Amino acid sequence: MSVYPNVRFMLSANSATQFPVDDGSEVAIAGRSNAGKSSAINAITHRKSLARTSKTPGQTQLINFFELDPGRRLVDLPGYGFAKVPPAMKAHWKQLVGDYMQGRKSLLGLIIIVDSRRGLAQEDADLIEWALEAGRVAHVLLSKCDKLSRNEARETLRRALAELQGRASAQLFSAVSREGVDAARESMEAVLNKKPR
Image (tube, rainbow, N blue to C red; front, side):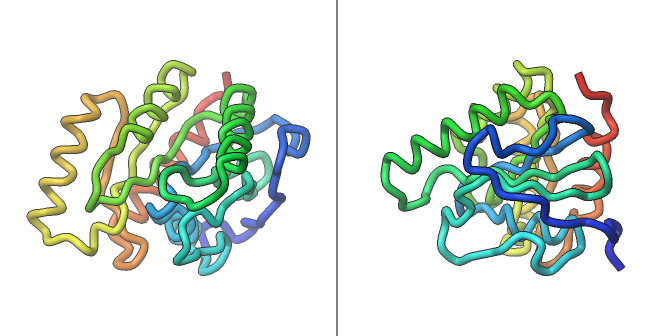
């Protein structure tokens, strides 16, 4: 039984004019193209195929809006990093995401998916800094932690928390073993329950 029994895909936006009405509250999921964003969305919402997963990085080329329940949305942003797409497409993604993150009043925070085997990249750090400067919160999911030993996972989390220096929270996460899924959902709920600016 899903904790979000009425969760549904709303729409995919290719421009700011296609975004849904800017009210209620939203949390955006961001991360590198191969970090496991779609798997994280499916695990958190307890749905197998709410967000489409692919073995090819960069398949999320639009901003996808999902309604958890009336007035509360989860937003899947295009991945950055490894996607093998033309420069013009990357430029469009950057403009699209910029328009969303700078102009969206209902956006209260970001959940940033980071492959635990790779650690925080500069793009991740830049996104966290942007979130803080814009008055939003950021929470990092160190994904695919099932591929690490227990000691490696603990060290990865320790290193990430040291790098973040309290600017963002972080946790271990695996959509496969479901480690950290409940904690990730609680963090998302805490952001959604904040009062919009």
